[in-house]
Image (tube, rainbow, N blue to C red; front, side, top):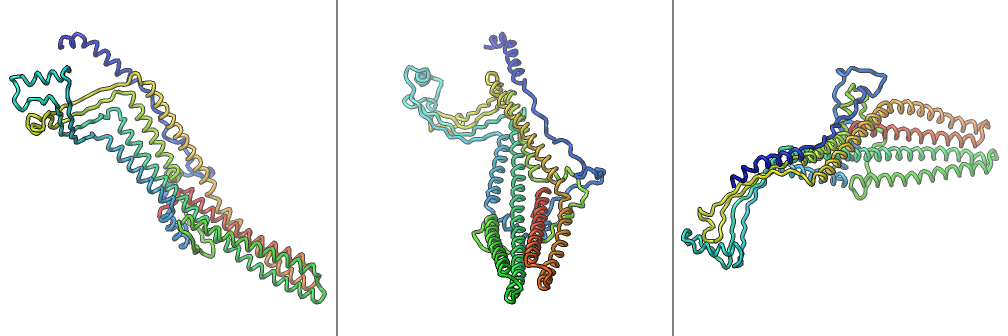
Length: 488
């Protein structure tokens, strides 16, 4: 045997070397892990030195929204919303996958107790061997074999381990770890969206309440004008047409006010659904309270803001996970080293199973390299590498979207402040116009249509003012989302 091995030793070495070289011809993994460089400032006209920029500190929800009643609703939503609770369960699942990936790097140790019995045929090598062995003068009585039913007993431990030479298993662990981090960011993203939706509905309720109050005040003004016109008709100074026009206008406002009450009820129900509650009333403030907008004046790093957003962080961790997947798939091109063994008691009789002579052990080692299945491995690697390219493009798109979204929002609040200022002046002028139209009507210098028109314009201006207030509040919610949400 030794002579045969020496004769073919050089040939065996050549074949083994060829197998290793063929297996190691692995393609490259894509190295795209960084998004294209962003501008240092959101405002391209304002140039700041990078040294003067500070790291962005994540918002705190309870201090960003200054409304204590809204803060209570946000806490309740985070504690009771079903979608958010489902996401928390998925975080636990992702953590379990991470732990499983870590354990894959360790050797597997199994305790085993195997029992079998075999009846060998008389014309088989085992059968003849067992029969012949029992006639041997070199064995003791304990070593005699039961020929009718030969037991095979084993009690011990078996161990196996794949040496992670090329990083296949460690990259699988890294992929699971990065996906766990991505799932945590996904939970932050869901929380941000949930709290933003709650805040939007809350501000909508405040706006609807304010508009309902405007309708009530306008109905009082309309009733006053109707009383004037009715008195004028009774003395022949006004026509029935004027009275009917005012009555029609009053009924129109009543209809709009009733429709507004329906909107309030539906909005409350939508908010209760987010809170995970069956019914009830939503406690709310009577006016919009300003948000925490000090961040607009901070000289913070653009990259610091963008990469603290949960959607960007989630996309980045998914990119790192897909990169680890590609590296793990590449490792399949290389040889695999498997080590193993067992130790325990092995016997063919129950009487000798725990004898010292039944102690057995074995060490195993194997090196395998892919040859004929290399095409399949190439395709699996190709898919993994393309998935990483997709993850990179998604990450880059998320960064670009985040930058442009935040850039558009940073100066929006200042614009709304100007709009609100001018709208408030418009309402003041229209309030004067309504009073003047009533006085002019009484003195005969204006007709009833001018009163109706003045009141209609004032009503619409007041409704528009509330609508702009709501849009301003929604803008602050959008800014909250664009800055990555907050922590409770």
